[in-house]
Image (cartoon, rainbow, N blue to C red; front, side):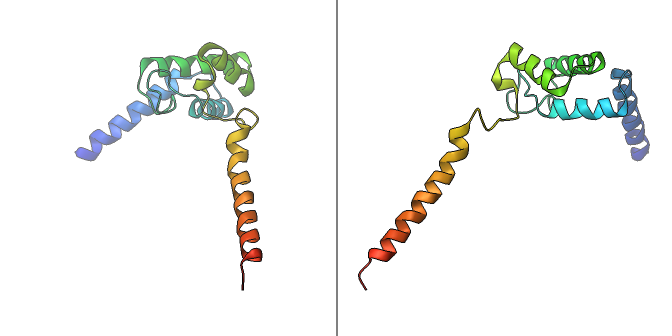
Length: 125
């Protein structure tokens, strides 16, 4: 009996999901999934809109689905969200935006190797 109710709940959730995004093909649903995994919830601020139950997350996901139906590309949708909510909304970081964060560890590694090498060469035997 317990499994019966679980099965009914699962089927209900599947039907609700398909009703929300009826106009989307399988390829478009994959795009929606990818985009919503990389858009931060404006209310929760700790996760993406897929993992959030906030109303704004559901609204954003529906808006993204509508933009996909209208023919917008992924980059265009990310730009629209960034224009509206700022860079904070985008969970994808671009290396050119945070160049210091990507190059600083490499620079520290190179300097450390250089210091260790110089120290071992100059060390008296």
